[in-house]
Length: 240
Image (cartoon, rainbow, N blue to C red; front, side):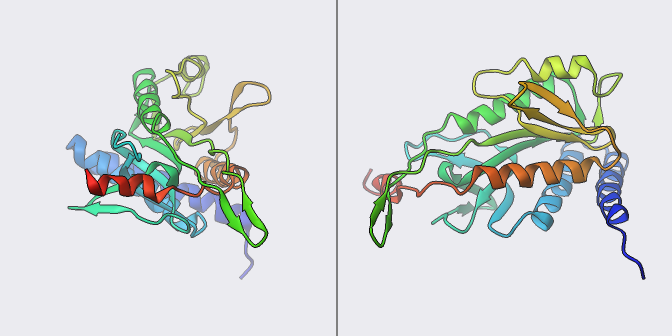
């Protein structure tokens, strides 16, 4: 059997596209349909991201006791995260552990982009600690906080053309601290923000889910590891 990387990457995208389409056609209840879509995106990331990352639907909390909105897809650290709260099947993740957050819905639109920006901002606005890092010769200074990536994941676009200027205009009108870095509209394309030229770029081929996945992995690599969490800042709540 002759392997083909082109076929493998096409199959990855086709699988995600087909599963999202099936979920949209099969489920009529909006909540059930939404849960199915979130599960498909979570499955993609859980399957293909390096094991140091974990992906779940969750709330995010900081050491001051502030909580984010519920986030459909949270990419967070499990190698250096000392704790994750799991109560009644609800996950609560410390803000220091978060690498990326995504809103997952059926169809992208201007109101949904604003909604996703608000969700992303609710995480970025949380307080994050960073401790000095001990090593054999002493300590390194506290690591600067990483940029928490934000994005949106959908099947369809509410615009015609699907990835035209109206979508770009909506993306470039962010709320404070809510800009979106990347995303995927599985039926039409993927997008990412190019910091160098200060512009959103769209994929122009058919392997949109794979394009998004590769872009996410690349940005996670550049972002590095989350900072060392000050666990005592959270422990202070034990005496309150």
